Image 1 (cartoon, rainbow, N blue to C red):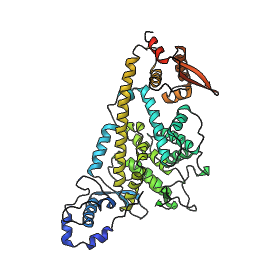
Image 2 (cartoon, rainbow, N blue to C red):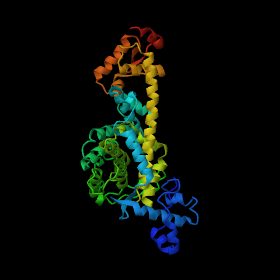
Image 3 (cartoon, rainbow, N blue to C red):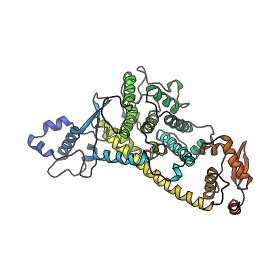
Image 4 (tube, one colour):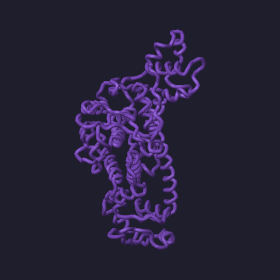
Length: 444
């Protein structure tokens, strides 16, 4: 990743531009003619408006942004407050997220029914846990990670521990989302995110101390991207972040989604822990969204979108920090990520709804099967290589061990599954002639 070029000094541009040229900059807005909120590193390569140099265009752009920027209670390492410009793209994207992720959202029955909802919630938590951990270096295949989480087996590698921790942290964040955010909640999330993965377990849920070497943010090639605030300031800054998340800082109205994104940025910027800062920041974002009524967030794999373009994620931090603490870059980037995650979810659910209708048509006469058994049967129709265990069935559908066992035993009794031993574990696989057997059961 190429580091962005910092913008030229605003004060120097302002003082070096002749007064008669300043008048020509009044018409320049905070975005370009395509509505893009460009950083200097992007703007300098584009054609400026007629009659302006790139530097004059930037000066006019920065002036327009300053005139509408809102100061935030987040203080940068340069001693200046971060600012936010509520440009049209932010307004448009937050409105779209309001419509699609909160309140009475029209969703396919495949997710709105309580039974199916539990299944898709688990699948989404698994996806988010894997992607968020892989962003921070967890090295394991998706198949192995999903197998671990669905079957309940103990993690073996460091990467698997990270993923299991993330899964549990997301569950914890959801469980506690209706209470105000406080320092204890942040520490609890960090302890869960890092359980069993730190060189010194005493570092879990503990801020860095003034007598320790401060942890910096480095890229894969060891370049330092960000040096966070001094450890002495962390307790006060963490409390300020909690106050901001709870709307107690007197900063006026900030859209709840934007506030959640800023909390994400704040924790990552302060980097208060020895490790696990990014995972904790993303868990706090998830918690903040749920606390503000964006229930669909439970089903969004935001980190999966970020993982596809990690450089964009890093650049949005750098653009904010290098342009005089303008957090607007990060907010816009994350709003786009959320929208893409919502798009993916809707596409996925539409496919699953279509598959569900096909299976229901095929199994219309199978009233003796419950929805969990029908889901498993449909998976076996799609992939005969699929197997199941009681623990996996229990985890996916969030039912008791007894209910999961009864489901599978019943499918054995009617001849659809066979129970085989793999080591000491009981595994349920499609019986010989599975498809043919289905055809003979429809009239029961």
